[in-house]
Length: 123
Image (cartoon, rainbow, N blue to C red):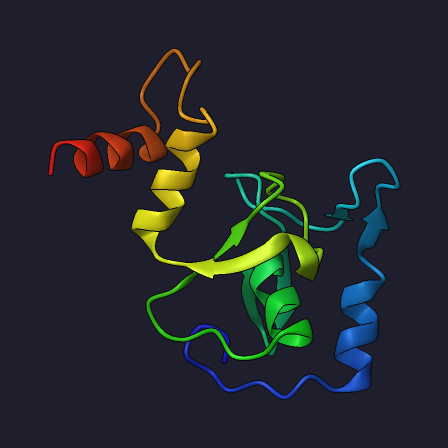
C-alpha cells in the first residue's frame, strides 16, 4: 500500500526503481540518485503519483506499511533506500530517535522537525 493505494510491483517497476540506486560501499547505503524533494528525501513516480522512495523500497522488500506508521532510517541518510537501514515506527519514535542522535542540534533557525521536537518535549 502506498499513499492509500494498493500497488502490485511488477518487474518493470522494480527494475526502474533499482536503476535509480547507487550503493555506497563504505556505509552500505543505497543512495537514491534520481528526483528528490526539498526536504532531501528521494521520490519515485508510481502511476502518476510521486511517492517517497524509501517507502517504496520498504514495500518492495519488506511489505505493507500499516496506516499511521513511518518508514525511518537507522542510517540517518534521507536518500538511503536500503531496506536493511529502514524500519517502521511512529512519529514519536522518529522524534525520540532524532533527539537521541542529536540531529536536531546545530540549525540556526527552527525547522519543521525542530517544531515537532519542541511540541513533543513540552506536550
